[in-house]
Amino acid sequence: MYRAELIGIRSVLATRVAAIIAIVGLVVTQLAVVTLLPALARGDIGPGAEELGGDLPSFDLGSSADQLGALSPLGSTSGTGSLGAVVIAVVLLGVLAGTSDFRFGGIVGAALASPRRGRILAAKAGAVATVGAVLGIVLVGVSTLTLIVGLAARGLPLAIDPVGAIGVVGRGVLVVLLLALLGLAIGVVARNQLAGVLVALAVLVLEPIVQGTAALVSGTAPVWTQFLPVALAQAAIGAGPAPVSPAVASIGLVVLSVIALGAAAVDLRRRDV
Image (cartoon, rainbow, N blue to C red):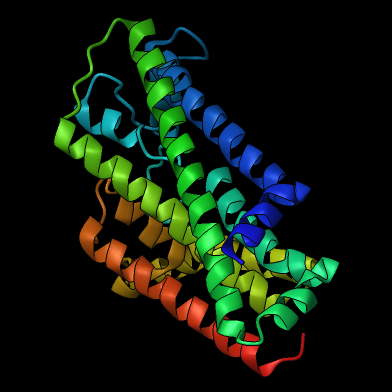
């Protein structure tokens, strides 16, 4: 059953497109951060750093901290709840994997072959986790390659601590995997592909709005806003400063994924296919 689910994910055009968008989105983001921002700061292009002032994000390609941030498979970002193309594409990949069987009728055959629906979801989760891990490794490779190209173009040395880099890379792959599983849970519960995509987009887009509103109302960012999905994902990677430690954020994201999959399992057992 796991193998069938894996083949199903690979054969659906929408999931392949989502993976491609994640990779292309990361390439564009990283090239902009690694090459465009330093060029703007130097005045090679644009009006220059003095004219741009606070509108120019701070990024020093020569610093170890910013080099570490550039390794993130979600793309370099300055905010713990920042939303990028990679996050959206990875979550939607999970959603599309979860809804494809309902859309094309494959869930009926799966239910007849295995009446225990928990096994169906377990097979789906295993397949999505595998695809998410592979995609995470590819995204880490893209981030690493763009960083090396940027450093070579500037003639700068690699200043990253190897232990820190390994931690960012490993946690980055885990985060991509968990985000895909969150998408899978949304897709299984929604069943309808359009509904699943809309729900996922609403959750992702509303998070920074909720964070901003809460910060305006309270005067500071409440602790609970750091435990929303995207904020947890960014903090778990540990590529930049965050109010929540990578270990705590990783555990939080795992717990959130388990809860979401548990809800999907209950829903799958109680509803007709």
